[in-house]
Length: 380
Ligand SMILES: NC(=O)c1ccc[n+]([C@@H]2O[C@H](COP(=O)([O-])OP(=O)(O)OC[C@H]3O[C@@H](n4cnc5c(N)ncnc54)[C@H](OP(=O)(O)O)[C@@H]3O)[C@@H](O)[C@H]2O)c1
Image 1 (tube, rainbow, N blue to C red):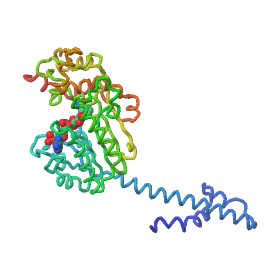
Image 2 (spheres, rainbow, N blue to C red; image 1 turned 180 degrees about the vertical axis):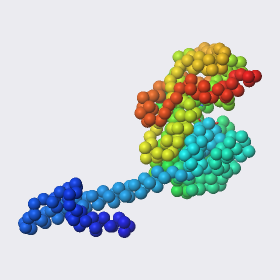
Image 3 (tube, rainbow, N blue to C red; image 1 turned 90 degrees about the vertical axis):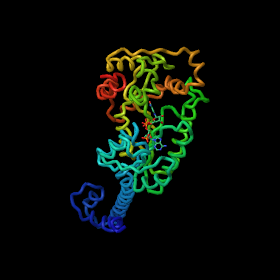
Image 4 (cartoon, rainbow, N blue to C red; image 1 turned 120 degrees about the vertical axis):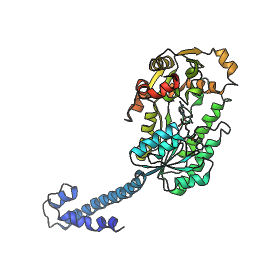
């Protein structure tokens, strides 16, 4: 308080005594001396006016910078799903910056959890339904990263998990929240094959609802990130349900089309975007960002993958009739039909303008050679 009052009392007189300064008050103090009381009075009045304005800005700056400082000083982050693809990528980025990472683990002894423990991630045992585990894990966290794999036995669970984490975050005094959603959740009417009755519709509705909850949650800052189609879908564990048949038989049977454009997103980029959004709340505040690395058609994607695997991978396209016949019994098809229209939500130029380094699928395949070999060439 005294530091704020200081300039109010001391500033005008000190600035009048300064010679050769550059501010408007200084220039006026050096203007021709006059015995004209009105002139002197107006100088003083003008000086005071300017000083008060400057002081007001200074106070405003101090109060704004104090609140920004408390938002920006991210030192401890709760990461939902740290043992998973998105959460794991973020946790590693944050640990590399020496930021504390708190998380829940359903199985603390798992290799994924232990790898993260070895780089300093702190785990509490529990799942997202365990409110007391969440409260303890979130204590002292400045920021929250929300990302959920849908529970196929309860598709509305994600919303409850998000609410529990947001509630615990509020109690802990967290100020910043980042939610990782999916492309086009608010524009499903633009997806030509979107099936309101499919499981994917419920998943999209849940994610859309969480976006709205996050925006209205009263946190000082929030960001919604929407990653594109994972490059990691071509390797275990995603390949089984994203590109079924491909790893086992070398043949993908799909509802996608050869010219379906995939907004490919590297796990590395997920880590970069998530950590940028977590660590720079004021830069990403209020933004919903659909991001990606590169646009490739399904044929180009499989071509590049074949080169990396070292043999030709085939694609068999389900006919429209076959898709229609299998739609109700095969939940994977719903996701593929949504993927057909995903690229319309990608804006690579806009993503590039955010200056987060992007990669290519070829770079991903080179870097993840081991995972590719383990998925496709089990004997090698
Ligand atoms: N594949 C794509 O192309 C794509 C594209 C855009 C968005 N997405 C979205 O990405 C999301 C999945 O993210 P991801 O790939 O990071 O998932 P992931 O790799 O499967 O990881 C899921 C994480 O959540 C944890 N988890 C799951 N259920 C839990 C529960 N009930 N309580 C506590 N922890 C729980 C898992 O922990 P455990 O280690 O205990 O299992 C794991 O850490 C999905 O919502 C999907 O829609 C996917």
